[in-house]
Image 1 (cartoon, helix red, strand yellow):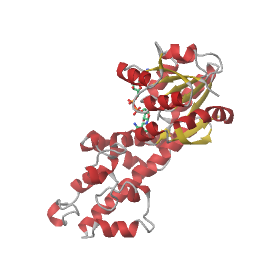
Image 2: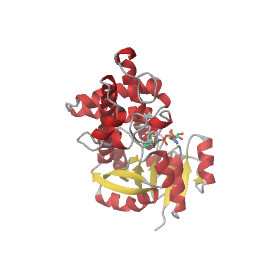
Image 3: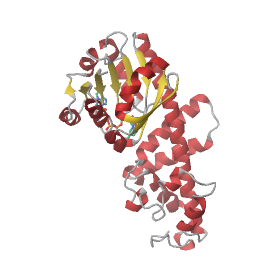
Image 4: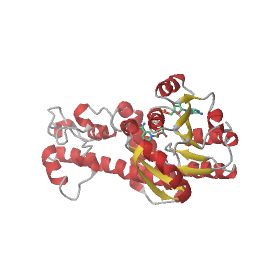
Length: 311
Ligand code: NAD
């Protein structure tokens, strides 16, 4: 069944996601503060709305894809998105935001007489363009069932994770595993280098032993063993380090709020924050191996790495 969808936030992710909804036969009313993003979306068949509220006024479903929780909450409340929509409209927020903000957004939508779902994604810009994203949804069963066909028009998989905020919780828990495991793999390679162990030998052992993980076998942080990993193209993203730093900051906020003893999650957040503010600003998150190597013992005490550059 085709729906009228308001889509607010037509950036790197939202633009191609809205375009995929148009391709699936839905009428999409789009809005973004940046005229260039709006123009790119209209070229893909999205109808330009004069404002976010104007788009919401006519919609069955309102989808937001915004930078952070404060943008979502301001749009919902102060900027009148909830007030503009018809009673009972389904609000689906696909942004990656704090679990607490997701719950507050859900409560505000319900208090205004609407229904809500948090549905953050993994899969990046490539997945948004190809329509292969994975959605992690939090909210009621009925809301998930209603949104599912729309999510599957933008992605290949949608998992209902539980009540309000559970989609965001699943996203940050998964990315906390990813951030910690990338640091673990990177530290192991740098330690291996200093012990005279070749990258390939460590890879051959760990990739088929208990150290096996995605950070090693798909996104291997050293060049060579996995030819498609960003390390082989000077760490061009991929999954950019600032996005990993953002997700780990959300995880750290949740860790502190919940009072969980998660030393590695907090450490990973601090390490990625420093990396993303420095050399990692435009690198894949696996580039953190170079920061670890740089902070390690003097190069003279370690062999050259397998690229021929001094380790
Ligand atoms: P982006 O900055 O490219 O897009 C966000 C858009 O929101 C911008 O175009 C901005 O102008 C618009 N915007 C902000 N406030 C607005 C308002 N009040 N009204 C209308 N438009 C407004 O960011 P992105 O890369 O598309 O990411 C969006 C979200 O998806 C983020 O929460 C991010 O963490 C998450 N995410 C991104 C990726 C990725 O690879 N880029 C992957 C997974 C999840």
